[in-house]
Amino acid sequence: MASYLLQASYTPEAWATLVARPQDRTGVIKSVVKKLGGKVSGLWLAFGEHDIVLIVDLPDNASAAALAMAAGAGGALRAFKTTPLLTASEGIEALKKAGECGYTPPSA
Image 1 (cartoon, one colour):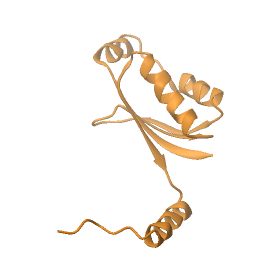
Image 2: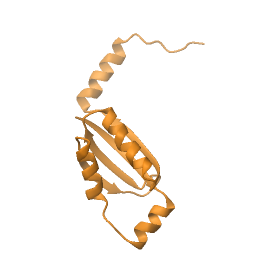
Image 3: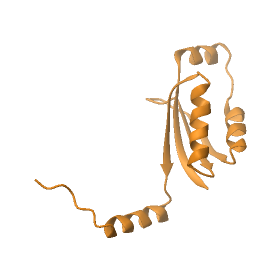
């Protein structure tokens, strides 16, 4: 399973609805992620550019894209960002491959 960092921002209308009727959306999000074959590792409300931060494990990129598409289609979000996460060992593997691939930077 691959891990993803998901960041989302509510629309002003969604915030107005949540303020008028506070509700915990964790169960809804967990249910959707489970239907996509994954699990939620953590979910937080946040200050700053994004209002919601999630760490999820999903079977593949298509499942992560499906989650982003479904969330975006709902109309309650003004932004949704998906960042694939690498384990430390995957990062080391990537570093080794980067060093062996023969890339040369542009020169003047």
